[in-house]
Length: 278
Image (cartoon, rainbow, N blue to C red):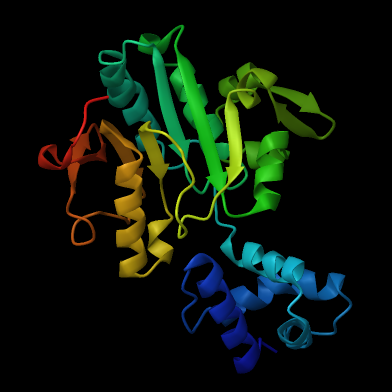
């Protein structure tokens, strides 16, 4: 039996209040499947019983686990390929021509278990123009569980099979029992921090590249507009924003412009909106 109406409504409102992610009617099966493990771990016979108890007790740590269970999204190595080709062939070389300090700052927002920021770093290492440069990588996520996994940098055989070329696996990973562990040379370059995109950002500095891919699709229009506005505030004036294939700024925040780049595209702050020079 699927989750009941009252339980689904409670979870839906909780997730929206904490993350602004909208669980539309029809997502009952998703909620049920994500919460079954939590219900079993807490000794409840059903998800409905688990949610009813949660609604009564409102234990903060359990509420957090529920939100994290419903906001953990799909990820893989070099996801969709083209954005990383664009980084290597276009974006990184262009930035290398204008950064006198030989340093590039990158933010991977909603980094999940770490495949995206590590893929970006591997791409930077494969970019000749960045040889000898420092790539300052910030990776953030709402889920502390995902951040802990990302920091550890350990992945199953199934996970490394998802988008990771064999030559890249040999170069950047070592065996860890039945799993694979990414090299300390890469993990040491990433600062992992908990961050909720729908809340005011802490001091972050300015970024040359921001990956905000496959995130905005989960938010309503007002939330998308607010996030894009705040991302503009932490972008270098000539910085590059990467969104997912199903996402765009048009009609949401027109201070951005879409710029074709190879088989992909990036978003830049419109010239008239730029207020300073990096």
